[in-house]
Length: 239
Image 1 (tube, rainbow, N blue to C red):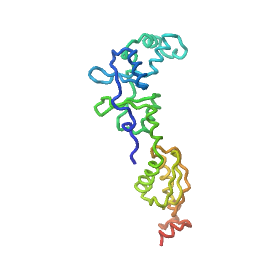
Image 2: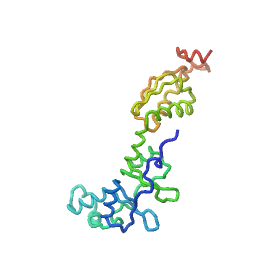
Image 3: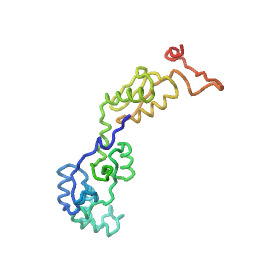
Image 4: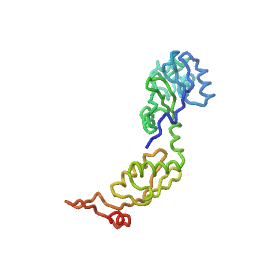
């Protein structure tokens, strides 16, 4: 199965500014482009930092109320620097969270949660900026058509990963909720099937009514004969 990667959902070649760009220009870019973050690059094209819309809002707040209770956790020097900043370089976060372009969407979401950030800068192998991915971008995986999810489950999970005949399992997908019914060859495949289906991009939940033809978990001691259940599929396979 190929999972969505940040390259599939990121904003490539994002608008950028330099450290000397006035904050008014930064604000204009954020508003005009309807984005939440602007990367800051040096004149040589190296990443210097990032300015997010929250940074500008914090500056506005500190200008009006330097002793505001929501910012008292910050040292006075930092509050002063934010309040008096005039350029992107003076306000930017110098150590933004970055992620390689080939990172899965699931891992990118974990990184955002770990860094408590709403965005990640996407970099290539050379460390150069390739794009920006936001929390809203990551939500695109939940917009996958139900038909695409169903096809991937039948093709990649049932047929390729589990090696079972997809005709034996009925797959229905409605608004990302997967319903499985039918019969697998072996009992041990049940848990693996549910894990694999839940890992498919765009799946919201999985409801299973799957049965099995052969119980390969509870084997009689000293016997290599598999215990079978009363199943026409099992009987057909064993005759």
